[in-house]
Length: 186
Image (cartoon, rainbow, N blue to C red; front, side, top):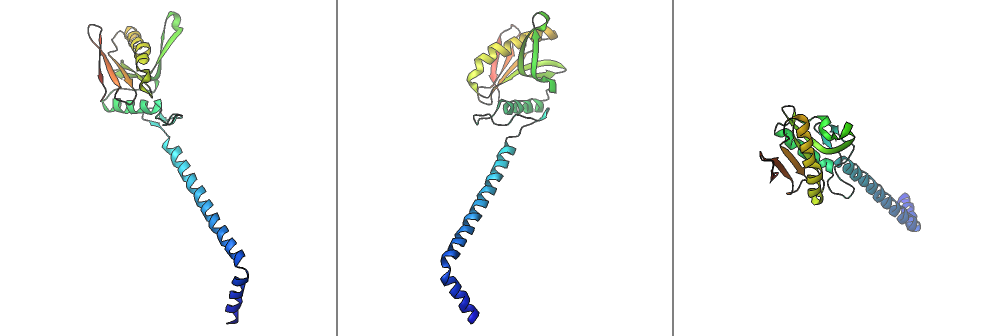
């Protein structure tokens, strides 16, 4: 009994210190738990931002742009996967394809992607992460690229693809009379 009475006296005489120590331990457990969960969330976010292209492998650029929306690379991979499923050829050098023209090739234009069929360039594609640039992309990139590549390879590049992951994404087809028609990409 005497040992139990000593223990009781200890708690009665030092209850403030015991309460403080208990509160300190609870606070420490809460801090450690939060820091561990933040680290898990941080790791999850960084792994969620990884892009893997079926042609180029893991990319340095992330799935998300600085503004939090999907990046242009994300939409490029989405388009590439759809084109590969349909049986088109895409090589590593078909990304960010540079078209040289003018005297001695001093002038250049670039499209995001060229698509091949039977070894020849069949379509050019421009990918954006917003649909605000659609008219400029068509007028200043896709149409000139179609014309230049058609003349260079001796065979018409029949299609131009504008892709932004929205309902505004479309494929243009060059008709026999030289006019263009378009339809939405589904």
